[in-house]
Image (cartoon, rainbow, N blue to C red):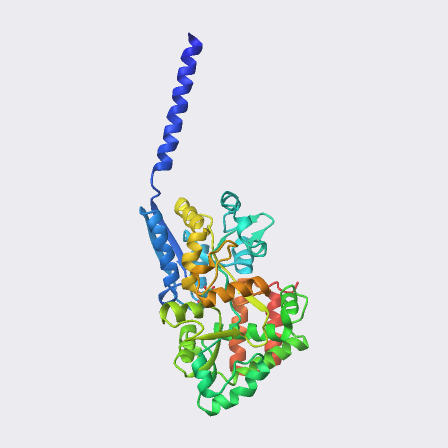
Length: 420
Ligand code: GAL
């Protein structure tokens, strides 16, 4: 009799627990979710589509799309730092895979380990191992990648080149040969914008001079920033700058792209968010209305970067953030975001039929090229170096002194731990 009573009691407790858990699981997710990024204005459509998709899945979650405008995150990163250090982290924030994540926020113990999320979603099998490595330390995996962008792309308008009788330069030497002819016609040979876009150009010039192996060695501290080849990089970069627009410091990357679109400039070196801008915002057709080629001297090389989102320690809305991250890594979400953004999905099972001809060609190159990481977009160096290098660049843009720039970059590389 006693045993029977016990059994009944235990059974009812178990049933109560089971139904409570079921109730919790069936309760729709609610609360807030603050997403912090620099995808504002012209850069916004892909993120907005992603948020729409999330809101359809979780109609009771209130999404706060917190953006700080400014290409490559120049302004957003400064605001983020103030918030993180002030104990006011957003729920999740845009951060580049590589040293911008690991050498900045992970070493400072500001991120939560996402190992179990990766395990539950089987993500170590669907994301390329090389990319997962950029998001990991021996302790864990620290963010979820939403895309792969290519930074070494030369953009142009085929029709304009035809009119001007100009071919796409395969090397910087070829560019320097045709540039004076363009200049004589009143056309800016290469458009450029504010300082970070000069750094973007610089890294592409550096990779063309050094090649992929030495570029990697530079970030492992194995090549001096004062070596003859680095001096050569600054010299060549200085030559190329002679053919850029005077008003570069006051232009955004979109305005530099606009110069090419409007026929004021012949070429622009920029990441493939420019393809997203020209196609999604300006409604130009890739392949016909605008063309592309590897940045001069970088054929067969894919300079990559990846935007990712993580979970900062102390995020106010942990549950909604985890739902966001889970969605972000899914095939469906990635194939909504990337065709609009100009990037590709890192997922090995991405549906390429959803991408335009530019995206499909980038996906093909991603699989067949030598891959190296971008400096300006956070892959190879920590934020301290990135910030200090921006100062070196500003000085160079004014002084045009290659030796001084080589010396200064060696000094900051030593100070910021690139050279041990
Ligand atoms: C990069 C970022 C891209 C794009 C670009 C221009 O750093 O990874 O997604 O936003 O800046 O702002």
